Length: 125
Image (cartoon, helix red, strand yellow):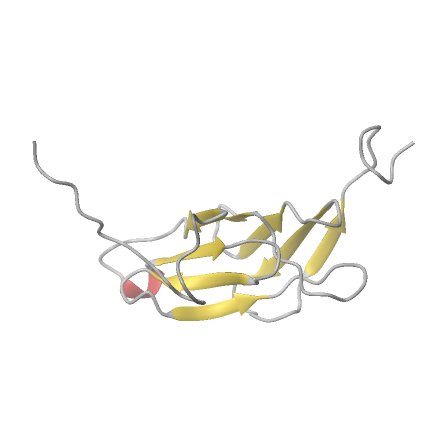
């Protein structure tokens, strides 16, 4: 049988983690258009969301969600909106929230939406 070889690897932001917590390809990606060949990744609770160039593994942008006590807190799950205009992050350690960032505006500016209470959540009944 033929040997499989890695066609994509990224060590952006430090040594490779045991595995990505989450990554998502840009939904309008076309391999014939390098500008659209990007993906978002998150590596855990202490790092921001990174937008990575799929051809060069270079960091294109970072999106930094902050929690209720103004500390950087990375998500464990990321995804793009179907039109590629927004990046969603969730799975935060301290808050039941969804962070929404405009793909064209990297940095801290984003919308943090709080999820409803549940019986099992620490802020529930």
